[in-house]
Image (cartoon, rainbow, N blue to C red; front, top):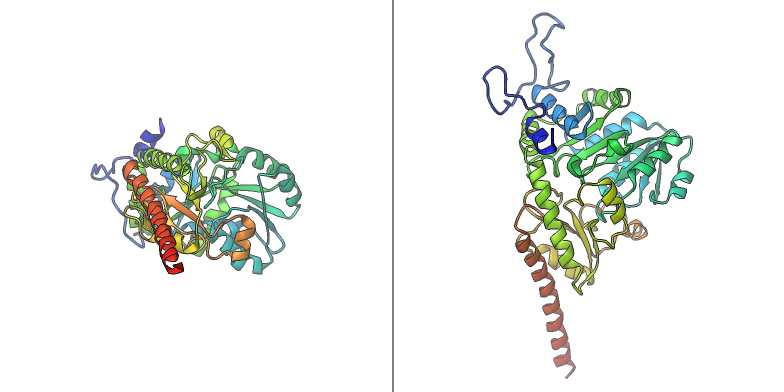
Length: 397
């Protein structure tokens, strides 16, 4: 069964009771039992719910594994992994380019619990080997990363981690299972911010953890029930609806991202473009090898000031200034002031996260309109500079 067919048919059987083509929303907190402890597979919706169970089955099918658990947010999903596998004195290795929320939860929540966070360039095999000790429990990979879209060799990193007894977690949010298959490359756990491309319509907050090994999955699944960070049945239903168009949407996102990257790389006000599809991207060859496409995100550094960045991101016609990504409507973000503001400025500088970096999430609009919108914004910066130069010249006399 091909991917697009799976998004529509896998675990999406016609509802047995009525023949409804679309599964109902089981909006219930509890279930009637025939006798104490005797039920029809469901006793309480924190523990399990038919709508949530259907979504978990679909996600597992799309990632090619048997086990999936969905959570009320992407960070709730990450928290479940950290709670399941990190104890005082343990270590986790993470990449330099890491989502701000991941950085915050590790450094503000788990570091005070005596968890050691080792943030390194995990693309450097020697550095990775040196960073992993007998106390290392997890090696965390984002690929492509947020926000600089760096690409890491998942297979090579997994080999090093496994040789030293550490589990590998892959954040597959940016690539989705349509463009990247982490379990086939050695990943032990995959995490998603379902909020983004999987749900795809900017109307759901949700996360997921998947695993192919039942023993690895069980501690994470236990925490879903024990700590209760579960999504509502309605949110699960919305994601099920969104998933049916995942392939179509990812194809359009990727086409738009490629067109935007090509247009921006030629502009004199653009210092650098981050997009794995560009040949000059340092991870281009790895992306070609381990991904079936280059994804739908583009970031670029403006050759300008913080004030020019602010005006640019705040005045676009089709790119709405906002947090998040992966929806059908285009979004623009200033990571230093938004998604990665929780990382101190001095740390951002060390990590190479420029204050003039702009992150784009092209939607499913026409590429010509999106490109024109961005070029218009750059032109406005040029015109404003010209006006200032003229005013300065007049003032000087």
